[in-house]
Structure formats: C-alpha cells, structure tokens
Image 1 (cartoon, rainbow, N blue to C red):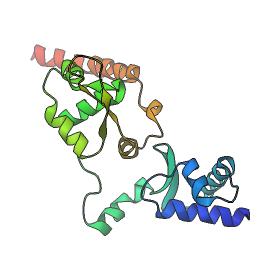
Image 2 (cartoon, helix red, strand yellow):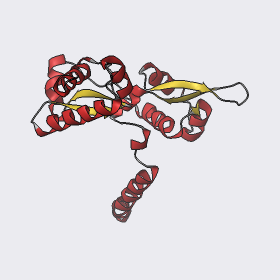
Image 3 (tube, rainbow, N blue to C red):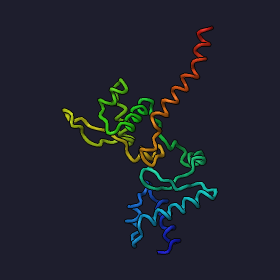
Image 4 (tube, helix red, strand yellow):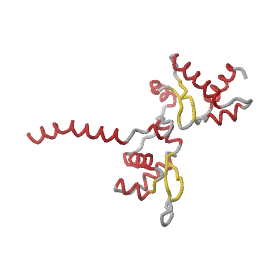
Length: 193
C-alpha cells in the first residue's frame, strides 16, 4: 500500500472513531499485510505534522490507543458549539474514592471505606454510572465481595496513556508538606493577633 494512502486511511479512521483505536485494531481494519510497526510510524508522522502546524486538533495516545482530540486551548469554542458542558463534575467524595481505586486496584468497597473512613456506596454508584470504574472480579475473602478497578473511560477523562502516568504518591506528600510549611506563618500570625 502506498504510504500516503495508508497515512490518509489511518487519519480517517482516527477521525471517525469515537473511542481510541489500538494499533492491533487498526491493523485488523486496514489489513493488506500492514503491521502495527508501520501503523505506529504513520501515526508518529501524523502527530508531527499536526504538531508543526497551527491546528485545532491533535492525535494523542490515550487509554492504550490513539484518537483525534481538539486542542485544550480551543475548548471554549467547542463548548459554545454544543452549548453545554462537555465534562461532568465529580464531587469531592467521588474524586477521593476514584483516587483510592486508581492507586489500589483491584480493591474492595470495604477497603476503600477503611481508607476514607466513611461509606462510599453512593460514590461507587456514581463512578460506575459514569463508567469511570468497573467491577473487575471478586475477592477470595468470605462472601466473595466485588473488586473495583478503573476503565478506559477513566484514562480518557484524565488524559492518561496508562496507569503509570498517575502522579506518584511521593509527589502528593511533597505538595502537602510544602502547603504545611507555607501555612505555618499564617497560623502563627493569627495566634499572635
């Protein structure tokens, strides 16, 4: 297959697909003896082309595949087009629960509740409903409770290629310590008043 035609086919498939396309899936669709290495090379070329030009879209690797996304800086105009919010908001409770699941998966509800110190039934319901988490199996513990993990939609929502892109817990510890140091003078000043 002609490389220009192959690149155009890949661009077209990425454009019309609502979900990220994995290299293996692209290989299946294209056929004709085109392997995943060749497809990856073409995608890299497309990414460079879109990166060099002042374009409103880009090709990103996300959730184990590739897809076309609008550039973040143009989101205000996309929102105007649809006249609605494109992203849903999560409550603090849901975000905390989601964070625990992302870092500790697979994890049971009782383990999440032990970490949070409160019931997470409603947060789990919300996260399941928004397809950010899924049931990944059952524990071997008595009663065989459900175990939860994140979904590909979680990866897409947070713009992650895979879970290794999550911030390291040490980074959070450093941020908290910095905030505590910065807060000390404020606390001391208010005690002196």
